[in-house]
Image (cartoon, rainbow, N blue to C red; front, side):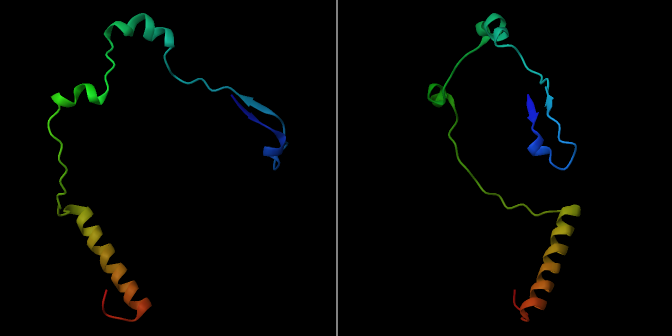
Length: 91
């Protein structure tokens, strides 16, 4: 429930407003009655042995299409503005 007090509504007629918003959801009773028999509670430690090894890689990918053209254009505009501001030809 949201309550808007007159002090929060100073630029209008300042009346107290209460608004109840219904939000979708499920009753906790639903879980106990229908879902508990089909649920499994695991922690990462319980399944670590079955997981494949983890490795992280960084792959540089050339941008193509409209995104690549826009990026090149943005870089060129930034360089020109920097040169104009600083007065040097290096960037």
